[in-house]
Every structure is written in C-alpha cells, then in structure tokens.
Image (cartoon, rainbow, N blue to C red; front, side, top):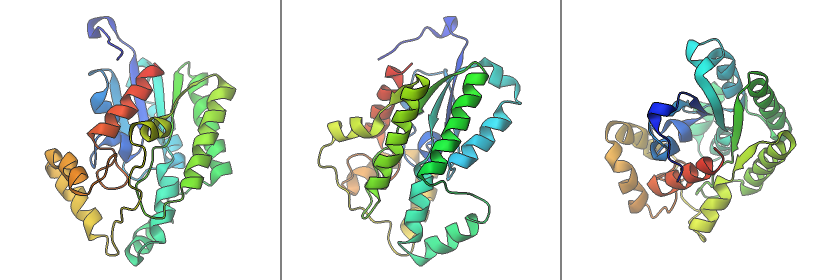
Length: 239
C-alpha cells in the first residue's frame, strides 16, 4: 500500500478509461486508491479512439495542468462490443447503431492509438501508466485477442520506459481456475437490469457477484470489490 499525505500533495492522477474505471456497473478500482488524488476519467462504453478524443478535450481544461500522472486503462470495449454482437440479435442492433459513430480498433490500430495517447502525455510532461486489460468471465470470449492486446500494452510500456500494471496476471494469480462461462443471455434484459439496479443501489454489486458465482466480476465484465482492489494495488505499484 502506498500512503500519501494529502496536505502535501498537489499533483492529480487522471484515470482515463471506460466503465471499468467509471464504476457505475461494478466497482471502479479508483474506490480502492488513496482518496482525493484520482480524477475519474472513465466513460461507459468508450473505446481506444474515444479515449484519445477525450484526452484532446481534457488538454484544453484548466484542471489538466494539475495532472501529474495519467493511468491509461482502455481497450476492453474494442473487443467486448464486437464479441457481444455475435451473441444475440439485441447486441447487433445496439452496437450496429453505435458502430456508425464509434470505431473499434483492431490490434494494429489499437497500438497506433495507444502510441498517440502516450506521446501526447509525454509531450505534455505527464507520467503515463499503462493498465493491462482484465480477465473477462464470459463464455466464448476471445481470450487470445485479450492476450494480444495486453502484449501490445506491455511492449509499449517497455519501449517508452513506462510502468505497466498487469491486472490480468494479478487476477490469474489471485483466482486460478476462475469461472469463464457467464452469459449475458439472449435478450440482453439481464444486462439492462444490472445497469439500473447497480446504478441505483451500489450495495448490490458484490451481491450479484456472489449470487452468480463470479470470482472477479459482477457480470462477467466489470470488477467486483475483490478484483477492483487487485487492480488498484497493481496501479499503486506503478506510482
């Protein structure tokens, strides 16, 4: 655990990410970080391209000058959303519409976008920490592509001399043999009720995780308290 005396700390940690960072559904790892230091830059459903666009917007804001370090945890939706489109008609409708304005990056494009994010942060004098993509507990999820994206992140961290928070590796060590067969269902109703229920009643998040027998997530995707804390500890090691 890393402890900070808040009265002596001015720099801000910007956590740039998606719903895993935001924590509306599931637990954000920020909840388990030292309080008062992190700005939550998580946006539900966001992709690598979206994070780059938002970083460009953030650079124009007054608070960006106080950012010392940016934790970049993005890329899950570039795999998750195309995966979901193949599981049920409802996802083809939802993400087919979104596809018209939100780009998904393949592995090569993902690397290019991450490079631009990293080089933007470096040019602005910010420290960057790359956060690895976590394990998905979904049936048929392309874990080979997940490993490929994490390899990209690790290679970029080595190339630019950055710290890499290996959340996936830490999760495997903490929960070997974790369940990998959870299914959102063919109607998508379960996913919709999760968003509503967990948004209105945050105390139900870990309840859902236990009820579904999921060691690391509340719904196959989003952190529960156990994995949220794992992710936070991995990030803290990099700070």
